[in-house]
Length: 156
Length: 143
Length: 204
Length: 93
Image (cartoon, rainbow over all chains, first blue to last red; front, top):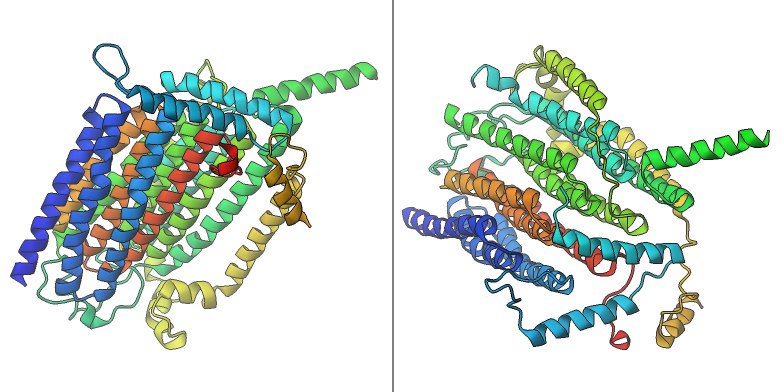
């Protein structure tokens, strides 16, 4: 009993470090992509360690195997969904031409990557217009322009 | 519990409700108004569910006594010998109904907003009123 | 369960409610509608946590599925049919602020008579005909371990029937307002030939 | 142990919420809300252990799925301005 407590306590402590570090990184990091990097730590590392600790507790201390199985399922689902969501956010931000911050005033993004994604984004937005009446279409173009405008400033 | 903290939850709930109320009466955007309505609703949900909370109680799902191990260091240790206290289930049922009805109301309101946008080309309340006034003036001129 | 545990649980509920207030004020202050929708998703996330902390697990499940999932998506759908940017309001509405403060003050004055949070002897919790009856007798009468289910489906079954009727009516209302006339896909010149053929096959 | 876990998660939830309220771009806010969703999943699971009834992990499981759906819906809205259109197809490129 004591051994399980110690082991799960260590797991939970390490997971707490990951979660707290990710949260602090989300506040302190200078631009979007570095923040994304910090937040992904929470989604995978912190969740993995904390949930392993909780699974140990549920299985051996609380004697509740159903909860342990559900927690394991949570790990599996989140390991599929969290990186997918992070990747989708990063790709959407790249297609919206959010440039990483850097020191020389030049974009750090690799030129080939930038051209690859931004060109594809323009093509796609031309092809995939909303399938709706014309006024909605003009509204769509307007909202695209507005979103680019909005990406630069904040909307307080 | 400290005396003045015993009512803190009710006060917080009232502040949440008033935030939703302020959005509803001070913002002209109709979608924003719907969001404010849902915030007001959730404030009322917290109020009801908070009334049903009982100290020391757990969720109103009957426990097998062997579920809780005596030797754990968790909070509910030693609860096996005593009678288990459950929270009041009645507010939960009422709020369960209210949440679903609230979403149905919200969907209907949003559908109305889409229709309004198709007719008026705007979802701002003052724009819509201006268009209405212009229309009424034209009618009066015809008479 | 000792006194410290009760204090800790109460403090967690208080902190979560305070966070909810902060998010609600953020929704008031920010002008972009998409931001408001994203923040309302955050609001539903936090509110389910509050429900779990208040022992209402069934409500938390419903709020998770309905509040965070469906309402975010229907709000986004509305935004995709309408404008995304809210018209900026230059002046703050002081009349509204005064009205809200007066109403809130009256309500706070009203709470002074309420029983304190978690009071087991409050009228709502100690009524022998309602709460106590459900908790003591439903095991014998209905034989379902979850009291909320037995109250929802059996003791108050007609309530649930009425709720279903309301949801059905709302569905009819939404359908009659928006209708099926949005599917004008064939007229769209941007579709490729293959997609058009696919749609014709679907329509046939 | 669970108490420390809950306190750490609540504090990091506060930090993430600051980013969601301040975030300069919409993507920052979305990232913060997604991260807050993960933290809420852990918080709900840990709260069940704290009160001695770990039966309510279902809610955490449901949340893990719903949060992902909401994030993807918002992203789809960002990219296409519409929820109805499909994703990438080979013909389109």
